[in-house]
Length: 177
Image: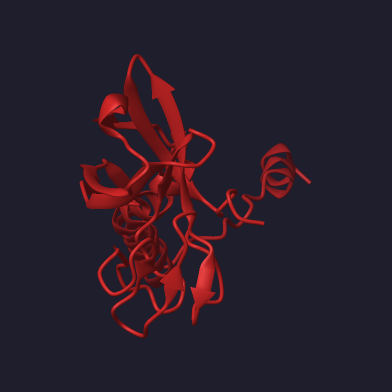
């Protein structure tokens, strides 16, 4: 074997796997489509998940009335809070029945009836009782249920500071046993 023949047999080029045009287009279009789908889907996922990841603010107390104006007779006081519910921010108006108990302590009751959620009023049909106009539920001055409703009226947390009454979140009634 001469030198040229020996050299040719040693250096046989290896056959490369070549990509067909169809495979190239499939990979290119698939990658571009995935990139565009990610561009559309990621903002939607962020929009849905972002409120969950936000730190929750502690429910604050709202200044509602001067302490000197409160008597033993329940007084309806309306106030406004700033509320963030997921993506929706609002400033709803709320109400409370505020008075002093027999012990001299200021307390505030929610005006929402525990029977069907109607708004209760003080006095009216029965003096010294809260009355629900929807189905006749009745409550004592402390919010204890007398008739129809399954539970006592809820109570706002109350703080007194520099002669002002501040109302916080609603809790179960602590005045009745």
